Length: 231
Image (tube, rainbow, N blue to C red; front, side):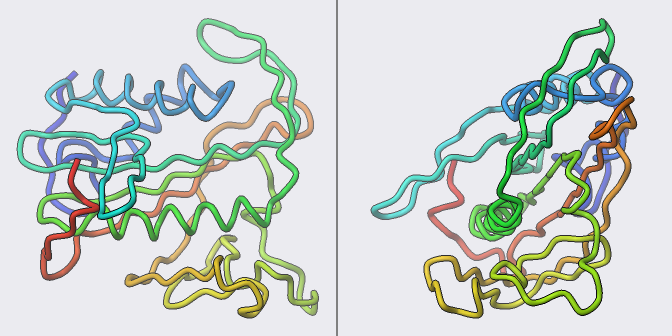
């Protein structure tokens, strides 16, 4: 299946909308064994929808004195999309998918670190996308409802307060960990991102509801060169 070329920052490699890939995936893979399973399955779904887009996993992004690795680089005929994935789960056991498979998901306990790492992915993509024709996508899939649920009114301020990623939140500016008490976790964003969680799948039993959060990162406005964006 070949999709119609698209314009705009909300597409993958300028060829297909994220919603198309998600819809294709959820029909066969309502749940994944691991983050690596999600990455591979996403790349395969993209190939089925837009075979002219080439996918590369774990692509080094080099800067002076440092090398970081990008989860997935999608290479279209004229544009690219850099993608970072997060798959954060609570315990769930069941059978799902086509063909049917047995799953036993383990619980990732530290939701504060899940928020921190997702925001860091956005900041990394802002660095990686300092080139014309390359946008970014930070994608989280989870069945942990506390990540998308707003905190209760009057709840005391937690160390990850600035990094909350619940429905309706906007991420922007300089975000402080524990009100700046731990500077290494400070994260500065050049863009402003409104967060909107979407349903992914609804399976039986506790922990069976999955939602995803997608944040697209546009290329730097001036298209400035940045060595960390080279593949």
